[in-house]
Length: 288
Image (tube, rainbow, N blue to C red; front, side, top):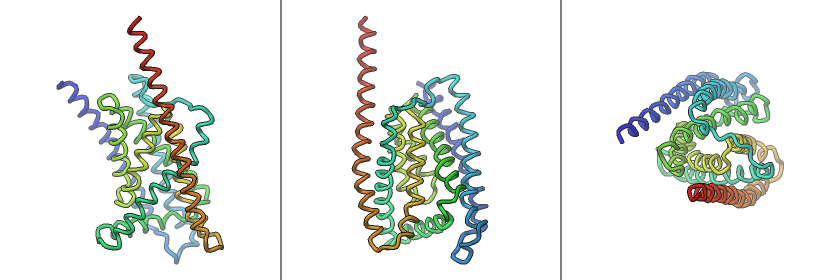
């Protein structure tokens, strides 16, 4: 029992170390990014417009390199440390719809906090901080924005919050508890309370998808598509010239989110089916 407690403490200590190092890098890089904040006055300044995605690019490259190196070492001792199965091609068609489900759920929590911000100073300050940060994410169609926010950031975050956290903790805890811990860390990493609220829910779904598909590739693609929608959708709406554009987009997101929920349930049923097959096979081998 004591040996297991020591192993758990050592595992949490290692994860905490990586988490704090990543947080330190993130903080340093984004403090640099905020030195030249984007404002309406310098909105045409290309340097100001590229600072935030450049910071995200640097941060994600450092994190990805660190996590990949560590994961390769860990896989020598624990072959199932990272789930690298390539799912059936048809399941990749689910990703846009499940991403819409993530966006819809995130929007619900964001709107709840916006409502609370009107009545409570704590939530109001969090909302102002979030809006100031979002102001940095200008020109979502720029290649550097797509490379950082849509590609490299999802790779870095999925490698840590899904692959590493779940890979380490599943040795000691049941998977539902591990997914919950993963989502909590994912929420804490975003620092701002507004982001933490909806990234916790998004983190739960991403962790579940990682487990159900047994594939880090799937969760990376889903995360990237979610960031793509979250970064670009507001700009698409603003660039349309008719009044009901936002209503139409919201209705489409709700419709796709419903389909996404159906597909998410399908992923879970496939996962349960495979688990049942493994259980029966194991029982037959024991019987023989």
